[in-house]
Length: 189
Image (cartoon, rainbow, N blue to C red):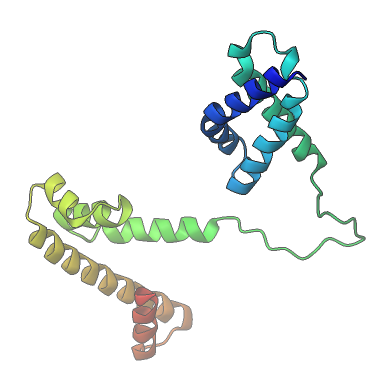
């Protein structure tokens, strides 16, 4: 490569390296890998710089080199799979418990007044701030806080009573003081 083309390449890299690094970061999640990817692509492009007739297309050419390099790295990755005679014991969660918990929560929410339910849903499911919840419901932030406090206390109470009922039914016991404590612990968790 002629001395003029080397200077031209150096100037190109100096002016475009930030944009090219952003492109590399979009291709690989790790910032260090992105820098490695860009350096590899620049090294490969350097040897072919004189073959790029239209230098205005250099970005497109370099991005294509980065994509091809990333694909090569992906294909060459070492997989940590080892063939064995026996399959490892692995539990696969089927989501049944999550669906049951969600169904229980939806059922318990029905005991709340509509205003309380709205506050709980906006604060905890929609993850709105107190101020955002207040603005959405047309109430003060203090009212949101007190309504939320009462609603959560009511939900805890309902969970405890349902836990006691289900334990009584399952065990046929009349003494349920220990189950009330378990229900409180479950609600606190």
